[in-house]
Length: 422
Image 1 (tube, rainbow, N blue to C red):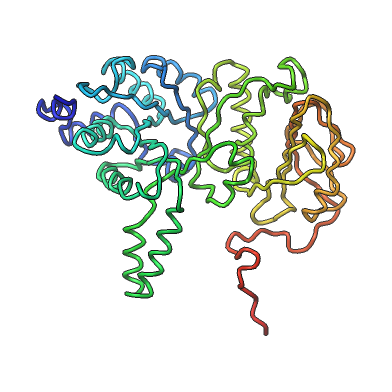
Image 2: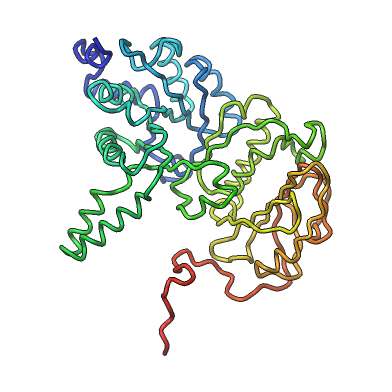
């Protein structure tokens, strides 16, 4: 007998109000903001994903490391219940008592607990039973993995189930194929033309995007491929990388002052306004935790990093990568520059021409984080970046090209929209 049928028959799997109350006691499902903001919890969350080799007891021990970097949301792996399991997780992860202990510890620290649950695993009687089990326990949401446009109707059905439970339960996914939001907007426009504004609103609601947080990769962020999506709906996966193949781990140039080791894998956190998903092995050592905490604090307190728009800057120097993060209101006048040296030798910046192409002349850099421990400004032409190092700096310029303010509502170039002549 499957775990869903066995639990339903025994009265233990789903017991209405009492089960919901128990779930709320064990874990905060996130139906309110915090003491700082009334906004939805997931808009300011930092997630830590635990590997498939972990156990409930090990995750509970890892909560201390999460607190050290102000991460507040746990992502459990796919728990892979056997076909004949009485509970919706494999025994190797621990007992039901171990799960309850983890949920109590998370609740005591006001953390959210989420679970990797592939969309296919939510289908049928067995899948529906698993979903109810986890939602009753207070799980704040599910990571569905890869979801294609053809699977969105199944995701919407799951979203409807989540909406029957109290709180802001969320769905995360790596969405593939046709943009759901664009498809919903297109459906709404068609309905509007045929049946009026009321029908359009109904069509938009029926076809709404069921995914709360769209997962993007660190590579997409660095290449600029993720720039077209709304940053408020993104979550960026950050995995730990080993020491650079061209830079010794003991090389001072591989570190930033204030203990920022292995910065290479943290760069996307400085380029995206989306919430981070950090692999748990990023928090293994005290040095790693200090690095993550410093970067997370910087991105949450610096106005441009928090809400700016990142773009790739082409450089003429092989091995030198550069990105500009622009203030949405001030444009290049409120910009940050992030540069990284991916080679095994020191690099001279030679960025005068590149910044001139961005509308800035007579520019210099005022470092926010730098690798060489030096003081003062950096010359954009003659400044030197050590091997394997990175530099984050505010850009100061003597002159700016006109019309450098970014208008998030402006049409893209060549869209055909022109200002009416008076």
